[in-house]
Amino acid sequence: MAILSDRDILYGMQSGRIGISDYSEKSLTPNGYDLRVAEISIGGKVFREGTVKVPPKTMFFVSTVERVRMADDICGNLWLRTSWIRKGTIAAFGMVDAGFEGTLTLGSYNSSDAELEIPIGERYCQLVFQTMTSASEKSYEKRSGHYQGQTGVTLDPVRKN
Image 1: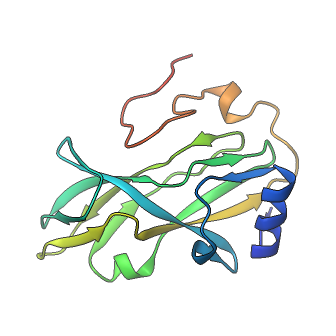
Image 2: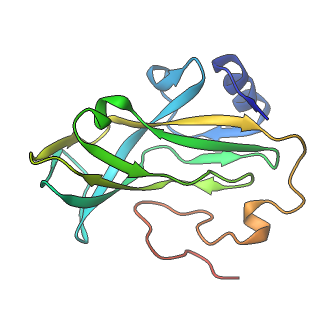
């Protein structure tokens, strides 16, 4: 596996192997792409504008502005931006599977004793693209695809096979 550089990501987008909707040049990093906050769900209440105030010791979910699309031989790791870690945010992210398409739902927790302010549209996590040694025999869409095509904070599977 190899991590894709900014040049590789741009080429992947031009060739159609990688899709990033609502692309922002500011979000491109030397070895990834910063995904931005589209909405935040706290206790089932969804916020889509302004600055969201997450209470201390509270779990919340973030959905990304960007829809991503991965080729059958490209996957991705998600990493919380260190600026959020420094404010006490803890997050556990999964792999973005080869063949996935949709927005991403990111589970997070405000571990601090202070209210956490998150502006809608702010960069939240970095997606690091990786090439696989070969294309998957069955991509995410064909293997399970439970969240294929999701939009917004999605806690239940979109599709069941």
